[in-house]
Image (tube, rainbow, N blue to C red; front, side, top):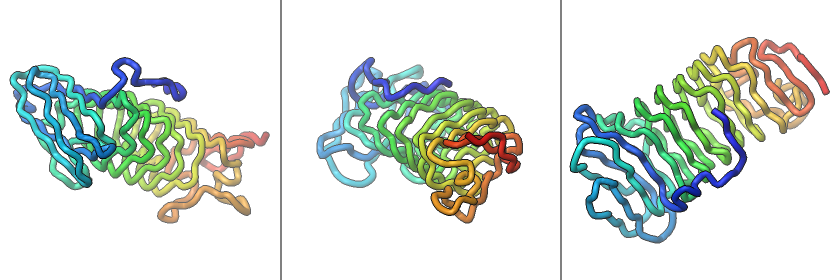
Length: 270
């Protein structure tokens, strides 16, 4: 996956958050979404099957909307004025047959600023997520999405536990980075490269079971700050986590003054 800079990824429609779903006899025709309002304006939902658009007046907190499609097949569901969206809003909520229906989530508006906890957890057929305005990911939002190949969220700077845990098709990711809690990338077995613009905290098992992860870029930290041995400015140890946070021994951490391997060998000092 190639992640570009802050280009206008939503220019093709200019508004709304589009969720492509494919309803089959296995998923059924019923679907239900939870969302948060982006502003004190109504949320409008177009279901893409010829039915009348629905509208919800503003209120705070979790809001749900459901629909039964007229026929099986692929539908483009469009939400206007949401800042968070998913099949669920908290980790621990049940899985549903329609979790397998979602194919892509693309925010054309840039208004989605928060990825809800477990919003598309175990969405078995989800392949693409584009969220240019998101800064915060929740707990296990996309965990076990085994077909997820593309994630574009260049401004993301806060990750709760297990955001991309066991997403086995991801290969390259680029984020601000910021604060990461436990197991964010654990089990991403094809992941080769992570690029961050800054890192404040990394927590336990963030890079566990990532045998192909060979390069992690942390340009705001020195080699010694990455290794957590500098006098000041070290990467914070979330849950007392220590370098290299279970990365494989050959993984290279690239800092602003050199490169250190996960086994502790400094490969280069600039």
